Image (tube, rainbow, N blue to C red; front, side, top):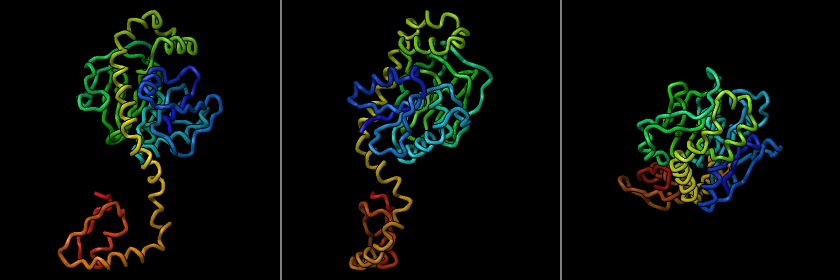
Length: 300
């Protein structure tokens, strides 16, 4: 078991995300695609999925050989409700996987800048209690159109899609909330031309990070706590969700046994049958056999 962290560049590591996971007692499973690590084909043993940033384009396979595999993994995580955190490129990939769109922006946004939290942030599991205005580290040129049904959590005038949630356990952050001083140093060294467009970026880092750190650590601490609390549920869903579509076909020969079991109940019209974890099997056959009320197949 562990948290799968997909890392596209050596310099764009998990930083503060990794620290929060460690404090929560969670083990990271790094997938360093920059070093040739293959992207896993499934989520077996994965407690959460974290996808970091990089200079690739979320809308193109050019120079991004693992894009398709990462999108498949994100879609699988969304289907199984595995906790997800996408940062920068990872947020754009999450948006695409959920039905949104990534595209080129109107120019690079690099340096310290303000985002504003949206009204939904006050009710969000990670963002509640965040200040209305927050200065963060921006470092991107592409942007995204959020998927239908997603919840916007933070925005700025130039690039409105700055933070969002999909469903109940997947978050995308366009800005680099994970940044600490080591991250800023690594980014400046890796992308000197881009850093040069934001004079004083490195010099301002200690003051900017001191103000950001309490909010950063609260968000990632909450994410780590959510991952730990849902670990057993996540393991169950990652096992059964990929099998659900073919479950009836795989066990088609069992149908007569379920029908016989329902018949033995001897249900009379108007009686109620309680479905406890029978899935699609027993209760849907009930009305035809004995007139009992059909369950919803969810085990509730």
